[in-house]
Image (cartoon, rainbow, N blue to C red; front, side, top):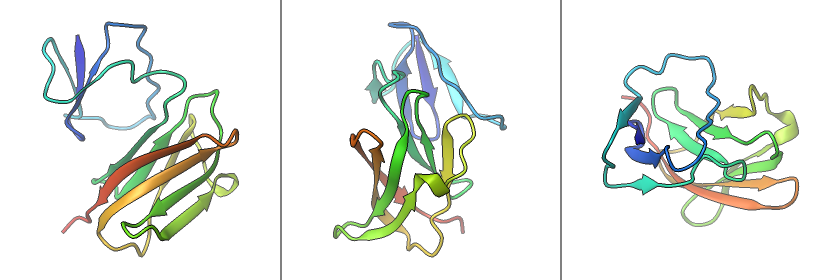
Length: 135
């Protein structure tokens, strides 16, 4: 069985291990679907305690970062395509609800960026995102 996240057109296999995903209270209409066949992009074992979830939410124009309860972030950087820090957040300054941070990248041009997450044990995770503002 697979869960499809329509927002990022990605399929997660959910019947190969225990499935547990904590979601913030919100309206998730037309965002998740269950299917018995995968789409073109399949990610297995994605819901582990060691993998953070990072994505850009087009509807709210926010960077969404969710960590497991065992992880703690030290900093989150937004890096442009020529390697410059466009924005950096120190995580002690961030509000977190259910280990989720929603970052508003204000005054940032549309384009391709890399989100760099550094944990307190100096583990680094990179995620490419595309920032495109609503018309």
